[in-house]
Image (tube, rainbow, N blue to C red):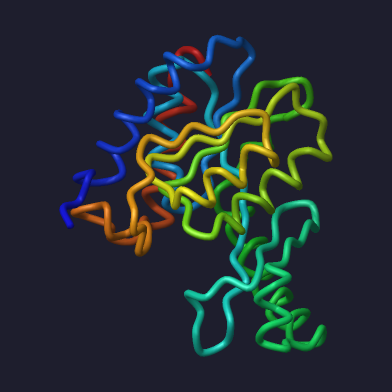
Length: 218
């Protein structure tokens, strides 16, 4: 199987073209999910001449098998669980609470680091484009969408370069619109479709936010 994208920057540029064709609304706020979603979101914000910010979510990974997402938490105290997986693995509420508490510490660390002197940009009545570098189970994105709904945006549009087809289809009921450039099958994981899927650093996230803040349309 050949990768589709060279890296997140190229994926963002390709996705930005599709989003620009599809989204005609004004008052747009582009939100990247750190870390990997931010370089993708940056490219979309540049093309749309829109404001960029981050929305922080943390996957709840099973201890010893962290890549297996049993749920996610988002800013504002929202928690979304993969209920079928929790039942299948017979996970206790106390274990889930412990995992969530650990991830909450990292969520708060990132919130502080990425915000620095910049307050969060208000979401109310804005058209939100919520961006990640791909969707496998989609549990982190679901947590983000659920948390954002409580802040009364005009619309929530999810935009990703690549996703599992089933996850993409499930999202149609969760948000106002979903834009997936590619839904390859078998999916096998987001990183399979990138030549370079090295981890995005905190410094790269900060750099994207600083560059976007200096844009004339910010």
